[in-house]
Length: 87
Image (cartoon, rainbow, N blue to C red):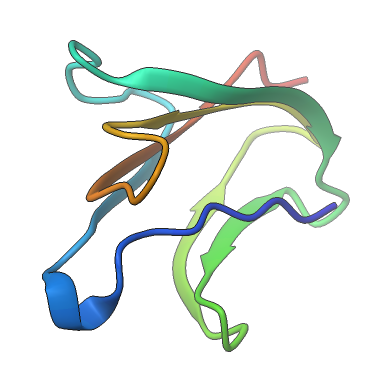
C-alpha cells in the first residue's frame, strides 16, 4: 500500500520528515491519517515523488498501525510518520 503527503515545494524551503517507532513531540501537529498496513518485507520505506527511497525502518513484524502527523494540511513543512502496534 502507498500513501501520499504533498509538502511545500523545494524552492520554498526544506521539509522535515521523520519516520520512527518513537516520535518527537507532537504538539501543534495535525493527525491526517491512521491505517493498518501489511509489510511483508518487514520494512517501512518513505520515498519521494520519484520513488527514490530516503528512509527505511525495519520493524519486528509484518503488520503495523501507521499514523501520519503534519504541521499544516495545505503545505506541510513537518511530516511525522509514526509506526506503532507492530504485529
